[in-house]
Image (cartoon, rainbow, N blue to C red; front, side):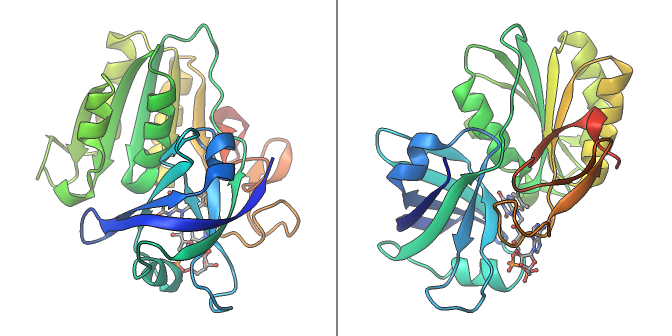
Length: 255
Ligand SMILES: Cc1cc2nc3c(=O)[nH]c(=O)nc-3n(C[C@H](O)[C@H](O)[C@H](O)COP(=O)(O)OP(=O)(O)OC[C@H]3O[C@@H](n4cnc5c(N)ncnc54)[C@H](O)[C@@H]3O)c2cc1C
């Protein structure tokens, strides 16, 4: 069930120039959170900005009451959030959304992530260590590749590709997805990142008749399904990303 939580910042550190990792003491959300869900963050104590900012959950420790999130510095809200310091209180709502659902029978799972998209995928990997996890991470250049070692610590097999070749394979990560699917008898694919990347991954998965879940990102206001600001087009009509998503079966989407 959705919670409103007056969370305390445990740490808020920069991983690279553009990406920050924030850790909250938020016991109510930590108990409920599932991979693929997100929190809605009131970045400032005042009323500006008015709208909360949606950020995916990277990790949740129900025993310690801790949740983590990875965020990209984009505009006003995330620039305010990066200035918030340890000990300060931040109002959170969550966990929002549906999260990933994979079949019990699926053993070999491929995760394809770009940018902060690796964050919910890492949460999935940490909660599914009984499965064989394969990860493909793509980014424009080396500084956009996140969590590679964290996935490896979980025992996942990781492939990295950068557009400029500054780290890992040169070129789009999607170039290697087909090969990974075939070689490792992948049962299901989960992808989070830019739309063109997810679309390409979904097409490859469909060609191999493999279920593929994608995570949609739309501009959001209430985060609870009331305002219909964050709709995306599906074969069953318009659906809200905040309540019906953010995870959708790729085959249901009208891209
Ligand atoms: C379900 C979901 C999960 C997300 N997970 C993450 C994550 O894990 N890490 C991360 O860095 N970012 C994530 N985002 C994107 C993040 O919410 C936006 O980058 C952020 O809201 C930008 O706020 P801003 O004030 O810095 O930028 P501004 O551009 O100043 O934002 C202005 C307004 O647009 C909205 N907005 C802008 N960009 C987006 C966007 N891409 N998606 C939704 N609303 C947007 C903001 O909420 C705000 O109302 C997620 C978005 C969604 C919908």
